[in-house]
Length: 264
Image (cartoon, rainbow, N blue to C red; front, side, top):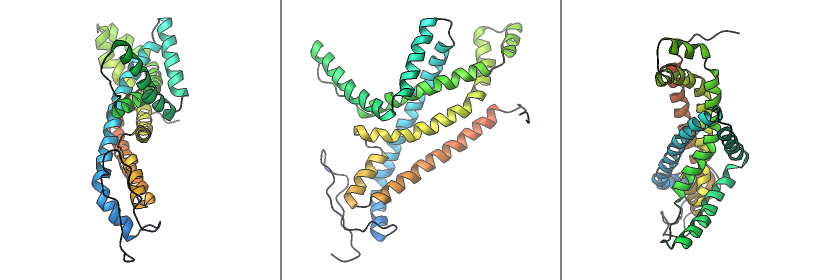
């Protein structure tokens, strides 16, 4: 084998088998082998990035819905509802994300097997994508609950009373006054939670989902170029967060139109 040649394992690997430990490149960057490997595996990395993005989008939709419901429960006058929501937010924010992910995926499979055996149903396997979305969505639903609760409380009660004085129904007051005003206060927290959620999607690689982190890990082991592929994943995550920050900035300007910021 020539000095400048590279040997890599076939991609993608055969089902159920780990990558072979092929590769003869040095751990320096950049070099010819690193760039060749990155170009060769770039379609798989982009496919993994699409999986990561789908997990993030589905999770944030679940988190937003859970957060709105949780905020309504916390602001409710019904004490048991407030206590249950407080327990939910405390547990979800207190347990590490990775531990919760493993608990839902593996513990959920054990509980599901018990139910299946009891009723005599056919075997059902928990899908890693579904487990990842549910876990991340419920974890960040707790953070969105507090974000929305604070935003609802920040809306001036005088505006709501003015809407009722004009003869608006409760739904009209919510849709035309409360929700738009709440969203303006909530957007900074929503943006921060979204960016953290986006980065947290990397933990789904621990339960076997082929996101870009898992693909980068496998490709790095196959080619002996881990730095190259992890750096590529960093660039992809930075691109996603940069686009997200730009979009959130546009939303902030839209919902802050006509609002004068006071100078302290």
